[in-house]
Structure formats: C-alpha cells, structure tokens
Image 1 (cartoon, helix red, strand yellow):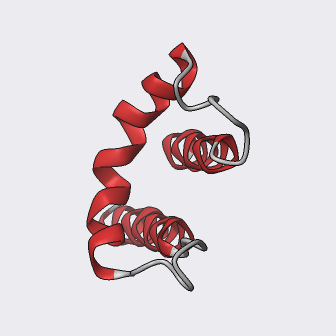
Image 2 (cartoon, one colour):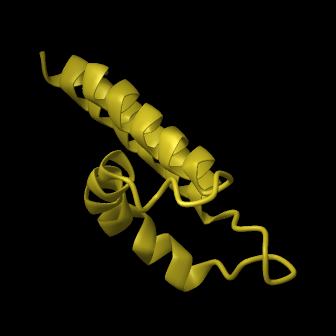
Length: 80
C-alpha cells in the first residue's frame, strides 16, 4: 500500500508540474517523467485529450493503479 501511495503522489506531482512553466524541464521534472511516463503513455494512446487540451488519461491511470493495488491486497489476504 505504501508503494501505491508513493507512486500516486509521484503521478499527482507530475501532473501538477504541467501547469507550471518549465517545471518538467527541471531535474525533478525529468526524474519524475522517467518514472511516470512509461505508466501513463499507454493510457494516453487510448484516451485522447478533450478539446485538444484537457488530458483525462492520468485520472484513468490513477484509477487503474488503485484497482490493481486493492486487487493485489485482496488476493494476498485470500492466500494468507
């Protein structure tokens, strides 16, 4: 659950950095991009931006990440 929370906040910070000029070009922005973009890119391929500007794919990606985390917890509780 801790890994889920850490990755959730990484995605959230990366999304918020898009609102600030040149924030993604900083060292932290590039580091977060290397960790978050591989997960977000499949969602961006299937979910186009709304009106060319608003990207809903991170919301869907966070929802899927949450489902996977809680699904894994449920399976582990069932096994043990």
